[in-house]
Image 1 (spheres, rainbow, N blue to C red):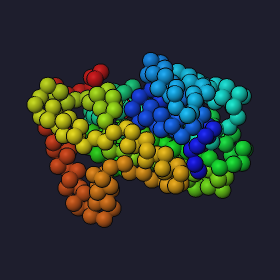
Image 2 (cartoon, protein in one colour):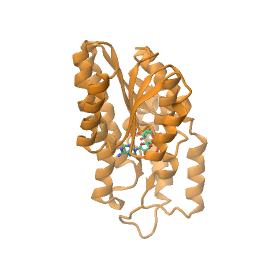
Image 3 (cartoon, rainbow, N blue to C red):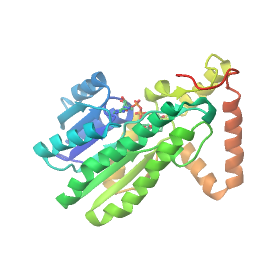
Image 4 (cartoon, protein in one colour):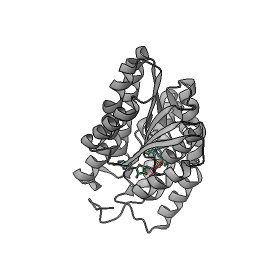
Length: 286
Ligand SMILES: NC(=O)c1ccc[n+]([C@@H]2O[C@H](COP(=O)([O-])OP(=O)(O)OC[C@H]3O[C@@H](n4cnc5c(N)ncnc54)[C@H](O)[C@@H]3O)[C@@H](O)[C@H]2O)c1
């Protein structure tokens, strides 16, 4: 479906990074936006950036997507005033890289609550009304390369994102008869604030090797605007899987077609990450 003048687009994670870039891209096309995030200042800033573009922000609300009642209430308020959405985008997320012995239960649970339960709350609150509307629509779920490949130190993050990939594929088949398309976006590195807010547990962050590896991954990051433009195109072309960068496409290819090479690369990455391990490992707050 086309995102154009008057298209109603709901976006989570709109205060920052990929969510903000996608909101601005949709506003550039004349969309009517329904924005949310847990970060009030960032959400206000996005709304200010939308002003002056062809689109408009119809409603913006600060909420926590891991709280089902907050999501359901926002959906009810939107539906009462504006009716069902045309496009729903789950973009909000958090990242945690750690090995199992270095994570508390609460840390692991929070990743699943935000990255998997968050999108479930959104889809349950918005999709039934889209089905009843009986017209073309689209869902976008931003997962990650970690949803396609279980990388070392990514157990919790991969669990959340692989769940989102699996759910997206099921919905792709379920929603087709209703004219609702589904896209799952699997980015590699993207140059957003997440690169700094990611919780990395059990690593010695003062070591030169840590700084070196961070710089290496930073150099391979693409811009959030580039991801936003791939998202808009995927909606228009009804594309299911969007892998945003070439390195991830290679990894995905090797995983399926050259498994021994894929495993060798992953063991090499595991070795590099394991060399960052703090001597006094065990659960910590950050
Ligand atoms: N940046 C990357 O390298 C990268 C790579 C792969 C996947 N992703 C995914 O892309 C998505 C967007 O991330 P980004 O890179 O733009 O990061 P970001 O930190 O810039 O944006 C994420 C947004 O989600 C919001 N958020 C976090 N928890 C929330 C909650 N409980 N309720 C509501 N909002 C919440 C944050 O406030 C923030 O505005 C995430 O789902 C992330 O997992 C990012």
